[in-house]
Image 1: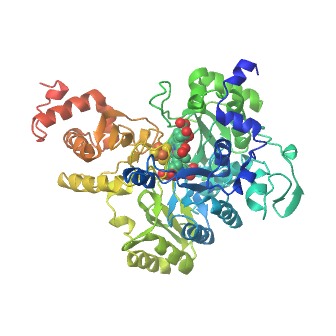
Image 2: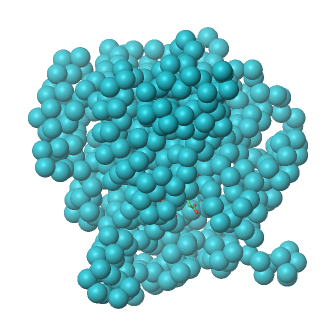
Image 3: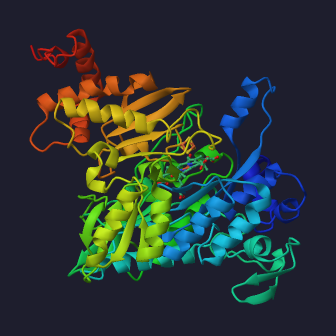
Length: 597
Ligand code: SRM
Ligand code: SF4
């Protein structure tokens, strides 16, 4: 690389170059007595599954009470990678113990089927990560410039082998793309960490220095940016295939997966100040047979490794490489790396979506129950004690568990006779059953945002429940309370709750204000568009409701809300709702807004 190019590298790239396979000074800094890590370690720590944060509420309170700028009291977020959201009841109990003993007493199901702890102090970081690994889960590669948690349709159907085949691919991908550095084992899993000598890997003590490490896929500088994969079905795109860098859409024949359509370059992060950033749904690349799929995925990751932008992190995701070089160039490169031509995608595309809530027969005589967890937060608060309910269910019924990409939980392998017990436990702890939850709440999700997310501009998780309360009331008034549409809210434009392909996206714009987007859909294969900008939180529902009046009057048969908005387009929707306001909210606009008179 030429020197002038080298000078342009970002701090994250420099940290990887000098980091000796993700070591840097994490080991020594872990025991330096401070409650924080230095900047370079902070960057490297992400690949180990943890973020240095602070409680922004506490900082604001300190400022308000005259504490100057408010000193940061550092805490850590720790993310567990759970391929396909599949975990045992023992693993869940261990995670709940950790959040109660070391964190802020809540556990969060993420939008990618993972789990997150918040509020872990630095002194408890090693214990947290070690205890997670003791249960055979890991935080390695839950964050960072590597392949992240691989999502998979979590439905435990046993009517045919398809779902097991999907999970098998998910596990294979998670393992294949897991970083091979021994740094993680040295720093977190050994009893004492000296940063660089012997380490415990598996059951063996092995002599290890950075010199021994090899990353056969990533190389020493890993990827230019995070990379995300998901495995799903055309008839059940519950994992939002098109929002991933690489989506595997299973093609089935005779109830068997025979191959996959690969879709590439999905990604939702936007930085308003960086003009060239945009959300993108993935593009259809090729069809691969089931036995080719891991090797082709490796070729795709390596093309991004070698050609992705390492000089500008805002342009470093795969979507920008595709945008800059084009799909044809990308496909040719992947074929070159793979060593053979790749056929066009199979004609099948996404056509269905299931959130898997409620009771379902598994096909093996047992049942699973999908429970909605509002915004994924497992906590006890007053009479609502979902965290304790989860403990009781795990101890008494010992189910296997699946997390969904809509932040919900599936209790699996339940005997028919135990179904009543499970419902009773939930009710006794003040938890509503899935059929008691309104449709709008069921299909909603929000990202974490305040107070822990350092990038949040405004509230999301704490604001959405109130917005959904209002929607429930207003939709019931006009008889649309049974309509299924997604409402997804984020505290900034980074898109962690995937707001840009939803029917209604609410994206934090400034303190207390949101951009409202409409026109996406449950299938997740289409971006929405801006309907109104900078709307105060209190005005969000009143601003959107006229659209539902319009929808009610002019939808075509079986048209969904998202499809209706998409058909009408931004200009028409804005004009009609302006007229609606002038007409006093009667819905009698005489079609003026549509130029119909
Ligand atoms: Fe995310 C950064 C939380 C899914 C796009 N995301 C963050 C950080 C780590 C903030 C930071 O960098 O300091 C957030 C931690 C907040 C906290 O306090 O916990 C954060 N992201 C989350 C989670 C926990 C949201 C949730 O409510 O569940 C999700 C964790 C998933 C997991 O288990 O791995 C989460 N993030 C997503 C998704 C959705 C998805 O992947 O399906 C996206 C959009 C898809 C995508 O990747 O483009 C997403 N997160 C981002 C971005 C924008 C990336 C970009 O390309 O520009 C950032 C910022 C960044 O990376 O610089 C970000
Ligand atoms: Fe934080 Fe923004 Fe992601 Fe929400 S969307 S968790 S505010 S980075």
